[in-house]
Image 1 (cartoon, one colour):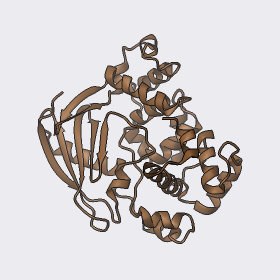
Image 2 (cartoon, one colour; image 1 turned 90 degrees about the vertical axis):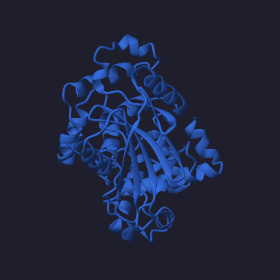
Image 3 (cartoon, helix red, strand yellow; image 1 turned 90 degrees about the horizontal axis):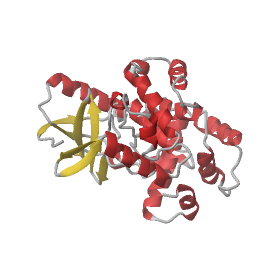
Image 4 (spheres, one colour; image 1 turned 120 degrees about the vertical axis):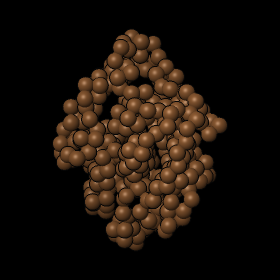
Length: 322
């Protein structure tokens, strides 16, 4: 699908805001729906059923941030659509997150303080809808990063839409109802394994009316209950969603075995293959970062993976297996 129509608007995050470390997360596995270069990110998005090509450009600075957003579409977009898209992106990208209290509270922390100073203004990143996030979570289950990348790419090729805009090509995700007539055997033929059943059950739930926007206005307990009611969603996935999608920045009640190994090295400097108990990690996070557990750990985690971009970290490479 060639996108020829463009519309440009400016987005204004709450200062301080840093573009590159907010729009590029080295720990995220690579997917063919986006590309980042310093100062710019291309990203596809399906909004209200319409596939879009987006280009975010940094045209501001730390204390006067401004993001120039160019929107490519196949047909012209009306003002109400643009307004809704702006509001959605402001939400998904945490652009209205005020970091003042967080920065003040942890600025003198011996471990977190220097990282805040280095990445001041960094936001978490989630461009995906809840449905898209769940598909990624399913494909990450019991798989190496390399395997997940392969499964995601074959799903894009079979059910996504290839968009061409700004001289580039990227895939755009499918919608839940696009899989209504797909069988489990068809998905298994794409070598996604047992995940085929999970993907279809989740897709059918969203096709039947499971609504992310309505859920945003519910208390965290109700959001958790609704998420756990989805087939194949356990406490770990629900926790990630509550933090990344619904912006509960103190949500960190579950630690996966993989994270346990990395946290053990980061916070206790022990061999990742002989990690400290999860209960000990949880107690540490509660004591040091209560109120901002997910955001505080996000800063420390991202700092590690930005270091990995510039230097080899042997113990981490053993755990990633890309």
